[in-house]
Amino acid sequence: MMLRRGLLLGLGALAVPQAAGAQDGPQPELRKERLTIITLRGKSYSFMVEMAVEPAQQSIGLMFRPRVPADGGMLFDWGRPRRSQMWMRNTIISLDMVFIGQDGQIKTIAERTVPQSLAVIDSVVPVRATLELAAGTCERLDIRVGDRAVHQIFQGAAAG
Image (cartoon, rainbow, N blue to C red; front, side, top):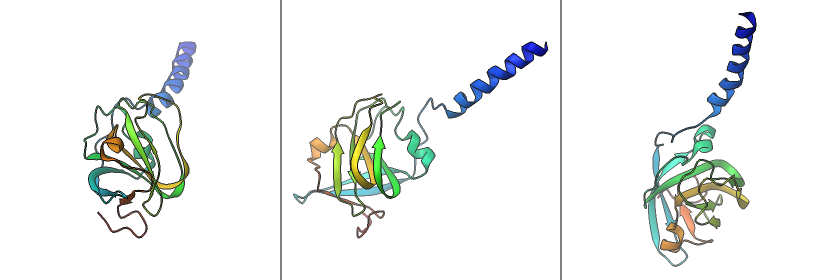
């Protein structure tokens, strides 16, 4: 009995950390705010984005979500400029990732990311935020590097 109990306790210790860190479904919808992208060609596009501001929210992101609305997305606010490195683990849909500097300028874009991939998607330069949109949005709306995102987190940008 003592051996069996020790074995069970040992197995339980192995299972608990795995279960505690496992994410097997999408997180509840996060608080939404308006973000506007103004292109260098003068076009303006508004999105209602979920705000991922807490580390736990950011680590789950859009995992397990079956879709992203055409006028929606998720904004990862890093709090200060830093290099953003994302991946698509447990993300079942393709996304466009837009890396935005402190001033709201779009610095880099990764279009049509590969679902479930563990490859790192890197901003290359420090950014204040990463915006995830439905795959193909940047192409469809002609959103490019140099365009500007307007939201309260960006310096000198009026809330959109």
